[in-house]
Structure formats: C-alpha cells, structure tokens
Length: 342
Image (cartoon, rainbow, N blue to C red; front, side, top):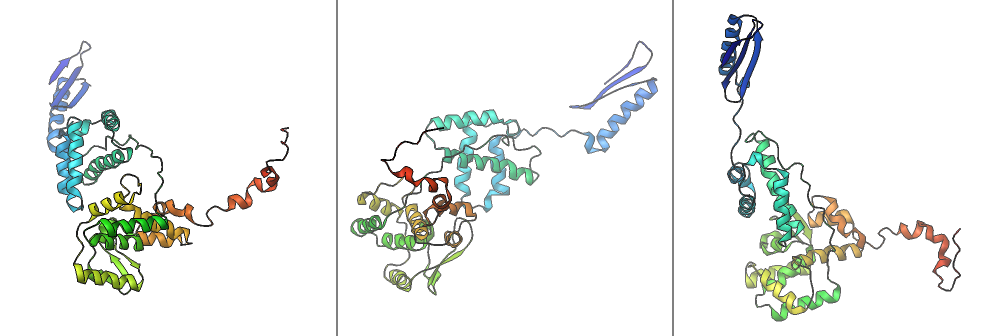
C-alpha cells in the first residue's frame, strides 16, 4: 500500500489488498486517502465480487477425472473414452487445462495424422475432448470457456458404402457354413441381413425378444429400442437355434475369417457392418421408403439414412426428364456433324 502526496498537494492512493486486485485514486486530503484505503480493504472482505477468483490451475488429466466422476459414469463406453482422453492429455504434455490453446491441439493433431491415424478417428477423439470442457462448464465445475471452441473438425470425404450383391451374399454364407466352427456365426449374420441391425445388437439378442413375428432390439447404439418385423420362417429358425445351441456367443472373429475365406474384398472396419449396408441398399433398390428405413436402422437423424437414397430406382430421375440435354438428343449420334460454337 502507498499513500503519497503529490507536488500539487493532493494525495494519491495505490492499494492492493489482495494479489491481483489493485485500486488507485487521487484525492484532496490525506484523511480522504485513508478512508478510501480502508473502504477498499473492507469491500474485499465483505463482497466476494470484489475479490478475484484464483486462476484454475488444474491440469487436463485432473479435469478428465472430474468429467468421468460428474458425467462420464453414465456413459456405456466410459472406460475406453477415458483411456483415449488420458492418452491425448499425456501426448500434449498434460497442460494446465485453462491454458490449452488451439495451436497446441492442432499441432498434436497434425502429428497424429502424420503417424497414420485416420481423420475420422481424430475427429471423434476431438469431440470427446470438447465434451470434457463443455460439460464441466455446464455443471459449473470450471468457469472458463472451451479453449478449443475455435478449432474446426476435419472435413471428411464421404466414403462409398459397400454392399453385397445377391451372388456375394450366397458366397459369404457358403463360406460361413464351410469354415466357421461355431454355429452362432451363421444365425447372427442371418439376423443382421434380415433386419439391418448391427452385429453387436444381434449377438446379444435374447429368445424373449423374438416374438410375434418381430425382433426387438434394446441394447442399441442410440439407446432407443426398436422392433423390426421378420418372416415367420426366420422367427421359427431363431427359436430353434436357441433351443439347440443356447444363447449367442462372441463370434465376430469367426465371421471375419469367413469373409477372408470367401475371397470378398471389403473396406477396413466394414466387415460385419457390410450386412447392415447390404440390407439398407437392397431395401432402397427394391423400392423401400426412406423414412421407413430410418426407423428400421434406428438412425436419430434422417441425414444418416440419406446415404442410401441414391439407390432408389427413381432417385433424381428429374435430371433426365427436365435437364437441357433432352432438346439436343441428336448430339448422341456419334456420326453427327460438329455443332459450330457461336
């Protein structure tokens, strides 16, 4: 604290009652200066608004633990998510969370991409990290904004969704019969093909959820249950399988081996999912309704289902019916003379 008299006779007060909060004022008399100094000290004690909060010095790993305790515990795959988040924090040097910058993260992201990690994986992990800051901010655990709010996700090129033709379906199921030792592989694959469900949804199916000519899926990715009708013959076949062999066991590796032995070339991470794509693709090619497909697949957004819309028989046929080329079909004649450009 300093109370000094200026050359013109006035008094200047410079007081810092707590670190980071400083007050200055110039008054006419020393008594006024002393009163101002006393008032500043009293205000800091009586009013928390006058007292600056200490900066949040917690590091990123600590915030990840708080996120898990306050929010992540309710998530189904929290252990794997926390493992990913902690690896990210360590790779970035476990910075003070409030001082993390977009430049720090994007440099880390560039190194990950250079090491061969896919853009999609990087985007998913970035979403997890942003969730830590956003959720803790909403819960009042932190008082600073998401430091990565200005960072944009990497724009991905839409990839082609591979599906099986009728001949490929026959070849795949033939390979399952010939090369898979567990009988569950064939039935789980058949359910996926008939309903468009995910492999994990079919593999955890219980007998009581196959009834009244439909399959009820409850352990779904979107946390919403859905019912998909099936033919009576398949209904009976599933129950017969449960009676003979019991509940399904983990047979994903067995299916991957069957794909390999069938000679089918499928994109990475689309082996079991190809059955879901195959259902959706054939559904649309056979004239199915896109809204019905959304409900069957359990997509929360129609945008996800629209990936299959181009397979509908009449998809964008207006391009042929109403495009300008319809008046110049004589151009199709390869023997026609070249049309001069004016």
